[in-house]
Amino acid sequence: MSVSLKENLKSFGFIILGIFSASFGLEGFLIPNQFIDGGVTGISLLLSFASGFPFPLLVFIINLPFIILGYSQLSRTFAFRAFLAIAGLSFVLFTIDFPVITHDKVLIAIFGGLFLGAGVGFSVRGGGVLDGTEILALYVWRKSETSIGDMIMVFNVIIFGCAAFILGIEPALYSILTYITASKTIDYIVEGVEEYTGVTIISEKSSRVKRILMTKFGRGLTIYKGKRSLIGKKADQENVADIEIVFTIVTRLEIGKVKKLVSEVDENAFIYCFPVSNAKGGVLKKRPLHE
Image (cartoon, rainbow, N blue to C red):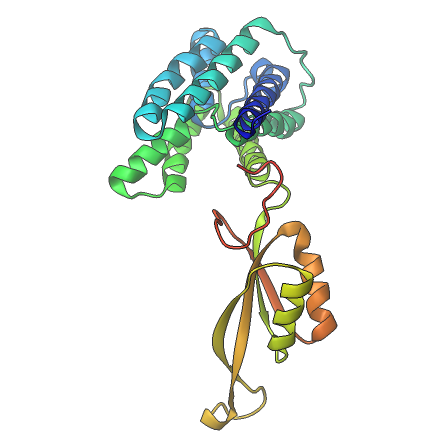
């Protein structure tokens, strides 16, 4: 089996998994209890609750302009996968009746958001989308240089404002909780359990730290030149020491190993970590299920 075929099968596997997860979240939790989410899904749910029009048909129709926008702004492959994902979601919602799991509002908001967010996240991992809001936000960002996050936030503020007017304040507040849960789940699924993390190490034994990380960890390093003022003394020129600052990017699961190796060399080394987005190139470990 060719590499290209394997990648395509993996992508479509993610999309199918995303479709069923999102469908279960919608029919098992949100739709029977009139909860909404953000984005195009939220708009479709709100219109369906207000008009009685079938939700599966609404979510397909409203997403079509965004798919066309993705075709013109991104790529044919992306638009094709987005079309398959959204059409598949509508088809599953039309043909399969998932059982209603609970009517407890907190459980609906948490688990409905979790399954819906997981569905969107898996679809993104497969190279498609189940919601066209991100495509529109990207288009507006290219035209106006407004951040994508700000655009999505503005869309959702409008959606939840309408929800408060149509459904009432309490359902709207629970729907916001659903959206937050879904958003966090999407982030986790897309980034994966092995999210890239930047690690900065400041040590007086930086030469040995560099050696042990490169030999036992096999990871690329970046070295910064810095100056360190000695604590407890007057910070004049004579008391400022040159020092090397070691920086590397690892996965979240590898942070403990890095700290252990550094401690073997210098127990007093200063280490701090922070999440890194869109890391590419260099000597990076390829994450599982990474595109």
